[in-house]
Every structure is written in structure tokens, then in C-alpha cells.
Amino acid sequence: MITTMSQAERTEIANAIKAQEVKTSGEIYCVVARRSDDYSDIIMIYAVFLALLLPLGIGFYNFIELDFARSFNRIYLPWNDTPKQADFVINIWQILTLQTLVFICAAIIAKYLKISIMLVPKFVKRQNVHKASLEQFTAHGIHQTDARTGVLIYLSQAEKMVEVVADKGIYSKVDKAVWEDAVVKILAKSKDGDLVHGLIDGIETVGAVLAEHFAPSENDVNEISDSVVFI
Image 1 (cartoon, rainbow, N blue to C red):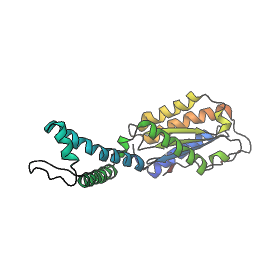
Image 2: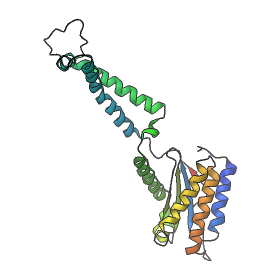
Image 3: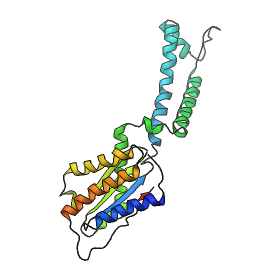
Image 4: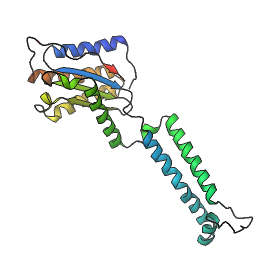
């Protein structure tokens, strides 16, 4: 996927929206997001998990090197005991220091190498994309059209996911499979890098649905901008 569009491509999408809205009193709006969340909380969870695993790794290493009892003493040596010179002793402060370093390194690597999105479970990404799409639906006033027939096409590039959010005026009249079909069409071309025509395919699908249920009125006005928005 791409993160920007040329002015010509934006105009092409706007013209596609206008062409569909001529056939209906409904409204179509497009938002393209670079990502729906920074997933910093997920990064922290993985970093904490790795830090907590560290003592177990040290314990396992000691267990296979020495007998169990000696391994236990090497890791959790009492403060007043003196170890043998050959023993590798790790006290509680050393463990805490190593855990802190592991936590910091894991968080930095995930954050700045931008691999965090690959570590996020799909259902978490889906929830964040859905939440972000509803926020954009409200933020741009799509729910304020006269007949409540606004439809938002929201695409999140990092997650490679699309949400089609329809207001209650149209949602109750259309089968869910229709919106899913629009999502499939958008993703089919977007995943190959053709975001513009992927969105246009989705716009045409949504436009056909709106035209079927909401014919244009004589005094119809364009209530929402036809421009695609990048965030």
C-alpha cells in the first residue's frame, strides 16, 4: 500500500464519488489512515513478557548445567553465603538489572524498527480499525445528513484493513454481505498497490446500493465533501 496520493489521483477519487452521488441522495466519504493506532500498549506487553521470562531462562540454563539443588542456590544465593569461585552467581539485583535492560531493548527495537504491527494479534487490529472508523464517521459529521444515508469508506494502511460504516438510514435496508463485497473489492486492488482504483471500485459498489434505495431528490445538495482525506 501507499501513504500518499498525487493531486490527480485525489481528483480521480473525488470525481468517482461525484459520479455516484448524482444517482442518489446518499453521501459517500473516504478516509485513508496510515494506521489506526500506534500499539504502544502491545509493545509494552511484549517487552514485559520477555523481561519476566529472563529468570526462567537463567534457571533453565543452570538446571541443565548443574543438579537442581545447586542451580537453585546459584540463582537465589542467600546474602550471607559465599559462593565457590567456579559458581556463576546471579543475585536478585543482577536479575532486576537484566530484566530492565531486556525490557528497554525490546521496547526500542519494536518501536523504532516498526515491527510492532507484525506482533499485534489480528483481532486487536480489527478492533482498533473499527473504533477508528466510528470516530472518523462522527468527526466528519457523516451521521448528520438529513436522511441519515451517509456511508464512510475507511482504509487503514498499516493494518491492511477496510471498514465500511453506513448510517442507520441505509444500514437497516442493506444486507451485510453488500458491505463485505465493497471491502473485498477495495482490498483486492489496494493490496497490489493500486489504492486509487481499489477505492473507486468500493465507491461504485456503495453508490449502486445508495442509488437503489435513495433516489436523488429535486433539492438535493452535497452535504459532505467529496474529497478523500488522509490522516
